Length: 318
Image 1 (cartoon, rainbow, N blue to C red):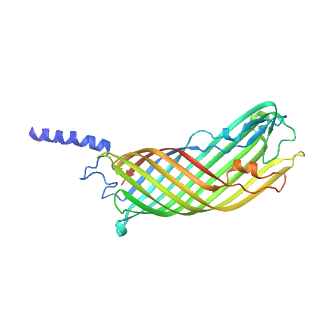
Image 2 (cartoon, rainbow, N blue to C red; image 1 turned 30 degrees about the vertical axis):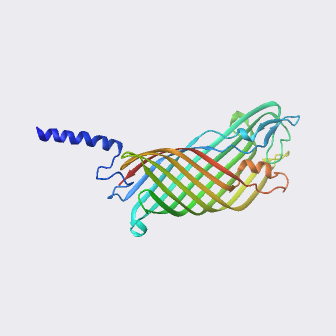
Image 3 (spheres, rainbow, N blue to C red; image 1 turned 90 degrees about the horizontal axis):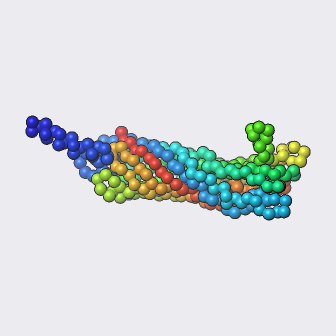
């Protein structure tokens, strides 16, 4: 009977630790089980796109503004984020780990329909030859990121890292009318792609609060070359396609940061705030004001762009 009571007592004290992720092999959870060789992070990022800079995108017959770019921020969109950590790669420098990761978010979109007695949508410094009382404006962004890092376990709380980063920003800016049956679109369409690649450095930092909870933070800075390719297309008065191609290059930076709370253990849950910020990128909506569709005037316009929002992640160790 005493053995049963002792066993019951052991189970009752162990179950809360297992549920909350407390390390049961000795000390307070030190970020990874000594026997683990692989850590997997699977989760979602939900990000808002920064509000565009001001510019008139539609005017009426009296040259009065009907719509401004600042109204095209859009809503939060979610995308997959995956990180794989290969632990205990080397014992040098206090311990070296290898890490690869990816995330992508499609359709950070904002679209509006404008109605007035006459709607002149402005597309790459041109307006329709035959204005309509209805106009549609759309601004959409896709972002993709891949990285490979070496992380140095100088101690269990602060872990510097260095690696390679790839980042792609795809922007589309369109002004159009719906065709028959609201299926086809007639108007102006553009694509602006930023392809960035280079090195990055940063660190991860954990601050334990107790045996179950800790504050985590992540900070990375990428120094990257940026190749910009874009094109704008619309029909002229004779229904012939007019295409304006544009390209450029730049030295850009990419900052990534995050902070939040984590329930620790071999299976962990993380919830926090996440931010991305890129400098010297070509945004599709900015090219609308900088480049002319019908003449060779204008050059690629550069700006900064920030995305921020929510990080929800599950972490597993094997």
